[in-house]
Length: 579
Image 1 (cartoon, rainbow, N blue to C red):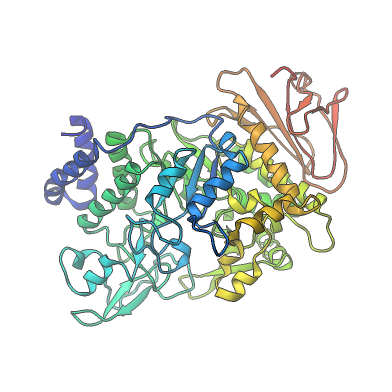
Image 2 (image 1 turned 120 degrees about the vertical axis):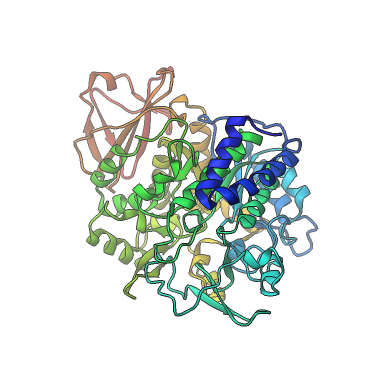
């Protein structure tokens, strides 16, 4: 039988806390049998742990396609593009957003968890990509498509699927439930037993799974292990905070939800200890980091406050809020780290700003987003009112400025924001569109009526190559500049996720600064970023800083005497010349 007696007891205790003793006693043998069935199928890991070379690219499986006459699958073309441009030397992991058959939400309404969408390719294409990169997969844990076999069997009343979803009397008071969308929480469906009003947190096409049934837990654990069998090093737990439903509560971050994450952590430690769990919880910071648990839940959590805080800092030319926030970040359990990012397939969430900035800052972000051609998503509050939930805009355009701004100026400002993210303590995640400098995809929004499509453009290979090789274009400047940042970053031991980080007091509201140190103490890097479009002079009076004269980004000595002058939007990674 798999696992030590201690690990088996851990599994039992997780089940007891979720379902009670009698059910746990019945379910445990089935769970252990499931783990046993996968124990010989898990491939040998290419790596364990993490270090400064860990960089994750976030992309759709069908991000790049060939011409109309191409016989290659998009997954194969994606691999060709990445290898052709040498990304295997500076990005070691590719996170494929849901690549399974789906019916809506660009993949997040899964029809079949164990199949590959034929519009993207097949499992051979996925395994081919794994030859050059580690892989991250999404476990779309909270919901599946209404067209899935599971839901269709639920509507037909077939066991055990009759327990897989949640039917609620529409007269029930659900006002306490936290809503991420301005849509009805229940959706009516005709079934063999009459009309059912099924819980649909995100859309009528995305039906929530009922983890109150251990059958669902077993089925989704099977899916997770299937992904590990097929090469996943990182499992992203999508929308995990909404997992467990108890009427009369917020149905967000419930104890049973945390227990489910702990169970999945124990499962992976038994059969695949190299696997890292990443929770996706777009909520205020204290709620987000609760998924670290006591180092017994997620290995990583998304750094959701970073994208809007960086946007806010550049918009206001003020690093004070960003510095104060960073100073509070790193009291987290050993063996955990942050997944740092600025852009993703979703918008820039603003709930993670709660408690960090005053309302007028949020109002200014909303206005700035509209001025830059973006859109603002809303959510419904318990009293029926609506509040901003996310800003739908590419991060490239968020870092732009209204008016006639030169590509050089725009690229410098955007790449500076990325260099801050890349230098922060944790593992960086880079959305494909940031890598290639994609602007707002307004045509995609108009064609689909879906605001998030503004940041989900798909490319034909030749079209993309033409954009990133046009030398005077914004896209080319971003593409080449980002490659330089990545190739430099992965060579610096100070950027190890476990290396200490501390805010550097610049004494200047418009200059953001922090230090990173390698775990062995052999390398220190001072990050300084000018948030303005003006020259800024900064004295560096600390004698310990005087040796940090060489800028890794520009490959130049930039500190003169006891100070430095930063060009508009310039960022530097200062270290000793021989490091």
